[in-house]
Length: 140
Length: 347
Ligand code: SF4
Ligand code: SF4
Ligand code: SF4
Ligand code: FES
Image 1 (cartoon, rainbow over the protein chains, first blue to last red):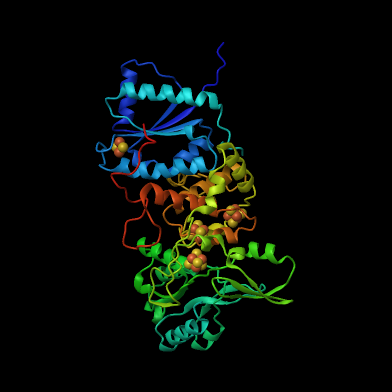
Image 2 (image 1 turned 30 degrees about the vertical axis):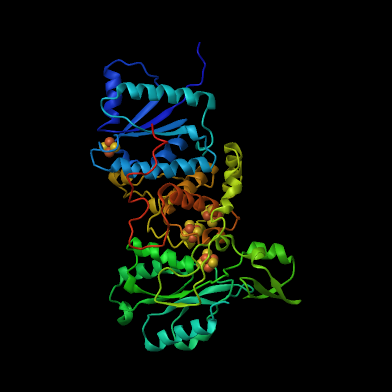
């Protein structure tokens, strides 16, 4: 029996690129760990900091936000707003002592099934030694 | 040198005499010892009660939110409803007004800003004062020379150096001269703090685990009284995402309303909820908090809130070259981006 810690990742994927990229990974039968709970959002620019804090509070061990590459956002610049806002979220989470590895952001296009696969594998590998995320997890 | 209270009084008197303003928000002696309290002056005769001393901590821009709400509810209710409200603003307070103007929450015409320059001084830190003086009973706190203070206790007046009791925000203040104003009392003194983010050094030097322990201990004290939010000039939302009282579910609440009104955070002062509240609040103040330090001063359990807000102020500057509250005409931090914004953290 395998009793290694399996981290749970909540991934906010934009519908137009990253979600399509993860689908491509799926239909191409690329093997990636089943640790991800994908949540499709319309655009990375629509990912409120609330979603991220909430995911951690509800027990996520890692959170990923992924959108289209700069220049490719379906809404032109949603991902550029996200880039700025989430840079602040990242700084803030680190400031209060969350392990920096637990929050990640990426650009994944609809054609990058392979990149998505790699990304998830790496994320799982980074999270595993950290163990469960208990800091922001809800206790009530 | 310090701005003269006589000049401030004269200005307030003139404004009220001429009927140029609806009323003036300023400071008066408080009932709790030597500290000033916010005051609303409606008649020229009251102007002599106005005080200006190193205990004028309050950011009076806070009251503009109430004023605006009243205006929205009853725009034509009073004959003088269209007159501006006079507000006494220090440098930091004026930057709060600049953010409110930037966000179009307040109209420039709706306020008459009586700027007061802190020159080389500023306000005191009550905690530092208490530690310095021990049990001596403080009767009066006045500005001294070279940014210092004269504190009168039951044993007579003593001189105290600026460094001993000046509030941290004033130590790190880059603009003690009001950035927006209709009139300014006091001189413009250039201040270049050696380390504008020096108070963050200690916490930033800690390992993540130690930082976590620090915040776990500090935020664990939070009783969720929301004083930090209530006193903040930037926390003007009618419904706060952290306040589930505004999201009460009754028999009449439709499924649709329930779906819209997600309860993101419990009011319970459990630490996971406290963290959520403080993380969200820090994000909502990113690029908006002008470091008046009122939240920290109001906190009944001494949580160093300034270390949260100052951190994002610093990151806004270092990552995006964004200065908070200096220009009402630029787009806000979160509603803008530059092509060269850093993305080395993105894969
Ligand atoms: S922060 Fe600056 S402007 Fe505000 S009270 Fe202190 S010295 Fe004056
Ligand atoms: S968060 Fe605190 S320091 Fe910042 S503007 Fe509000 S009350 Fe002032
Ligand atoms: S004022 Fe202090 S105790 Fe009250 S909600 Fe804010 S941080 Fe918590
Ligand atoms: S639509 Fe993909 S990031 Fe905006």
